[in-house]
Image (tube, rainbow, N blue to C red; front, side, top):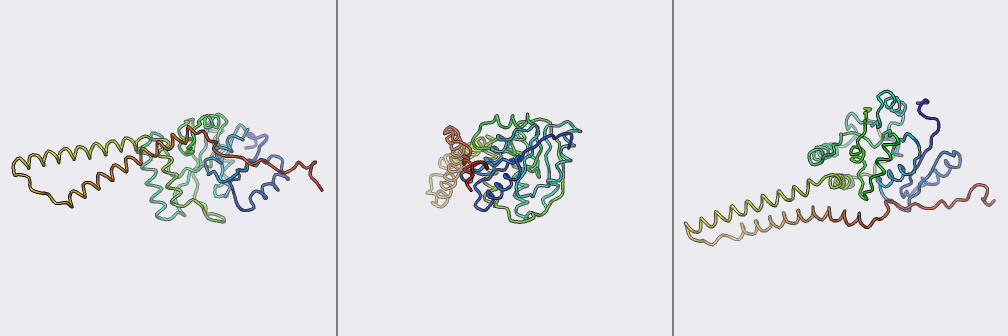
Length: 289
């Protein structure tokens, strides 16, 4: 690792924290010159924080890591050695299993990766963390993608490049609890599916075609039945069920189309992914005593 690094920098992204995170970071910055702080004006989310850090970094090698210290940072020397020995562009850290997660979370996570692998051309590996080592050319390729709705797990795969994986055992969280609830994970997964696949639109077409075909066949059956046996008055319950079913299918299809249209609308507005606060602290030689 010493042969790899001659100088380094730490970039901390403060994504709208409400505790003393910023004050602690400022104290570290006063003590160490190689620390940079990106302070968001509010909480813009994980993807905006990743993008801001990648834009700010200047090094030839970039390490992406969560600040909750759940990522095994002591694997960094091994990651550099793997990159050097195997001559790869990306080294990813991958959990061997999902020990520590609830049963429901395990089931939903495994289900998401299976569904995603089926509907998307970009394949994601279960257990791979955002903690990874990247070469500069990989970072530049990631930054060249200007989409507003970003799903970094798939972006890392989409850009390609040679990669290697480093497996590790589950590490219990040192303190605190994850703020990523099942609802947030569901939204994040839905974002990834829509951002990297048009399969839901095709699925909506297939569902509409099947329902229309069934309705056509049923109509033909009713016509033949009327010609052969007359036209007895059918009951209303079956009619109501058919109408409600068709109405539900239409709403689902419209919802899928609406999700894609909403992303087009938000993309063309060209809003920034995040807004940075200005550092209001004065330089040391200008501070008042």
